[in-house]
Length: 311
Ligand code: NAP
Image (cartoon, rainbow, N blue to C red; front, side, top):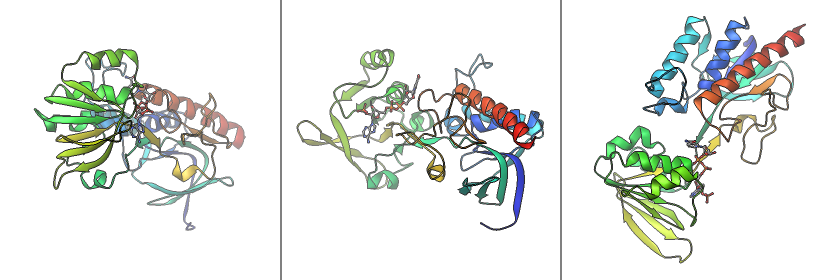
């Protein structure tokens, strides 16, 4: 790491709902935190066209607009936002070091709010046809496939919600699930079962995504019979869970089996002065409101830690 080091009391890594809320609380506490906004300022929710469950917006709010408002709030409070991506950390000793695309920082306390990314099937054509029929977000891309037949992969809440949503545009939606039982909650299962536009293809996995310039079909293998078939569709929405963005931290922080940062109820990690909030440590709720709440708690705890550490 180079030697031109910026010294901070509190550094926040990641500019989604958790990080921005931590920035609001940290700034108001007088800590003058720097928030490194990362590769996706605003976080995953910026791609949601409609957020109906964030309190204070009785008519719902567009996800991008909601995050613009949070960013504006940080700005209005005099918060320090930096549009840099973290490349390397050294948490082996205090003060902790973070190297970003623009600078090297040393900080007394750190809040990690780097979120999560969609899990991929791992197929070669998945990357090649990304944005050309391969998508990880039905709410972002569904409207492009008006009147078309499409597929959703997965059997959890996200897959079923996306499938239901897609029936607003698409003529038919296949759900491809690898088992003969869905993981999703009962209410979503009922909705899917009662939706005449949805057909579930059980015990099946996508073996390949076919198409020269655009998705044209999926090659599907039945796990029980081993039989294969081509399913003509114009798009495939992959909804098979998320992977927390914790690669940078795995040498220093305790992670659970899913790769999520382990925190206690006060958002503390196993390393003193390092806190985590939002999807990076929460495999259960994954909501804007719970992420924001965790960000607030992390900033309050960081402030307490800095007071005692500096005192
Ligand atoms: P999830 O619950 O982990 O479900 C992932 C699904 O993808 C599972 O059905 C899984 O199959 C399948 N899958 C995983 N890897 C696969 C692979 N490589 N190939 C094929 N299929 C694969 O993920 P999620 O649906 O994103 O939900 C995550 C969390 O958010 C859950 O706690 C969920 O309740 C919550 N959530 C809540 C709401 C809501 O309350 N409205 C909405 C969305 C999400 P198996 O079932 O065989 O493991």
